Image 1: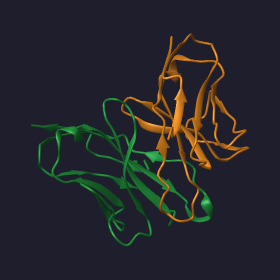
Image 2: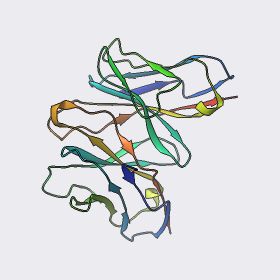
Image 3: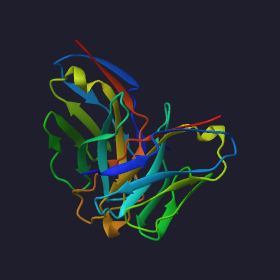
Image 4: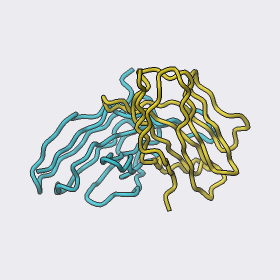
Length: 118
Length: 116
């Protein structure tokens, strides 16, 4: 079973609209972290936002917020007031096992290709 | 700050050749990892290290070796390149922390490898 599922291979959104990118995850570990990364056409991986499994509040970073629904195991990224520069691939990722420092790298979803139209 | 530095940025190999992808970080991070990115597959973990002298396999380790003799460096070796290893390779590093903050992975710029 996939640990990270991103069900939207591609999305077209009008500039200035809000965007929600879906991510569901699967883990039995009570300690985990969820990340979103942006990959523009230039290829670098840019960290956007992080949510820990024990965090009580949804994470926010500027125009990015993470809609964390623990019982549903979903961690959707919300981009408010989209801009042309938001056009990129977006990846959801998970790291399991913070307790005891046991991190074994990130598990990534397959990504969503977001295109912002003027 | 240099962050995570990967070399080379591009490489073409012939089938059967060996080479080493270099990765260095100057942030004193304990954790380092190698990923490969193939079209439609997202990033997949090859090998990782939780500190100098300690390495372990990820999801797709076959055909690759790693070692971690220093905190700063984590080279990835292709022993006998195959066309199936054509991919973009990313190195990443992060802190080890029981505090769930500040554990984002910092990525290098990537190495585009073609095996012909």
